[in-house]
Length: 67
View 1 (tube, one colour):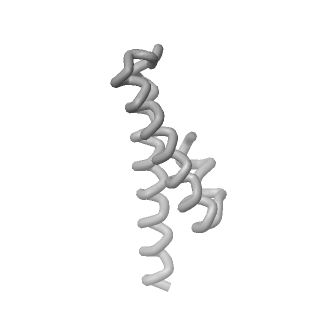
View 2 (cartoon, rainbow, N blue to C red):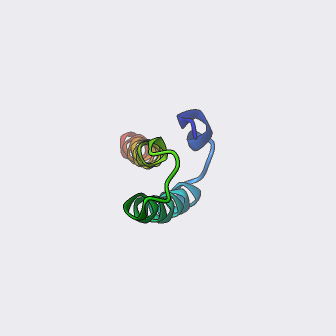
């Protein structure tokens, strides 16, 4: 998910995305431990999506404080 797409969402939607990505990351890590994960790069990708969402949330909070 690109940061442009994330910026179009509301705070609640972004927070829900973070939870969803966290659940997906948990499942991917479990698959990696059991050897069922085909693409190891998916773990890295999901972690980056979580970071993007958290960054956008932080920026939204800072914008509200300055206004």
